[in-house]
Length: 144
Image 1 (spheres, rainbow, N blue to C red):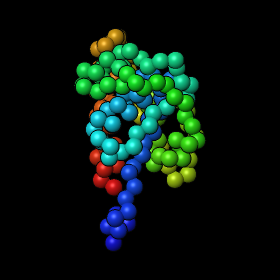
Image 2: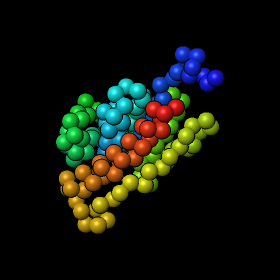
Image 3: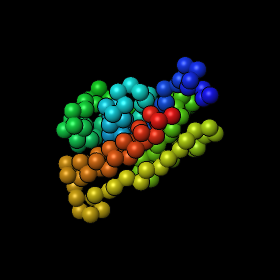
Image 4: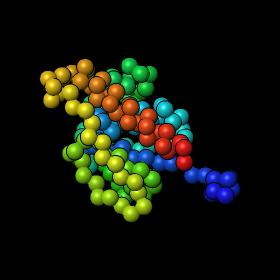
């Protein structure tokens, strides 16, 4: 008999981290919130939080009917790290020390600017790469 059959189940929690918490981690959090509909507790944070959200990241989510305009860059805190089951670091700039008992993943996301793709076209490609990864993670977390 598993623990879940006893009626005690914990909502899985994930923290998405990037350096500024203005773009990639906000994209991932917005996408997971829409997909999970409350079945996963979602946090986002930055190792060096910026002043504001990336307007193109906000617009790329608006294209999908996701509104993150009330969000703002936040720092990574011990409180949040202790509260989550999974920490996902987006890109290679942000550094977070792994913690015992926590699942850590690093997502080296697509960087279209390396191929000369800029602006909203770049942001939509980044969003779609992150979306595919978020969907896979959601299936894993919801299956627990």
